[in-house]
Image (cartoon, rainbow, N blue to C red; front, side, top):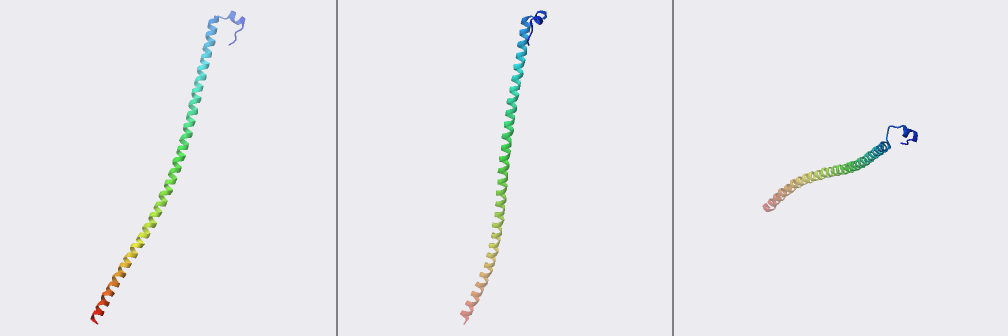
Length: 116
């Protein structure tokens, strides 16, 4: 606020009021700048938190994908092992039947040898 001498002499304001008005204007300007600084800081903090949350989400998504792939691989491996186990069980039953026949044949041959 610049006041010329003629304005000052005709002004109803005293020099003290003009100085006070200027100080009030400066104080308001400082308060406005402080508010802008606070808002800028808050915006910066919010952006940083948003970026951190995005990175955390990406890491969580990646961990989820890897865990899902691992689970699917384990499920495939379990199915393979179950199939092999079933095959072994079938082989065992087949061998048991064969052993039983061989034992019967051995017992018959023994009887034939003893009867001769």
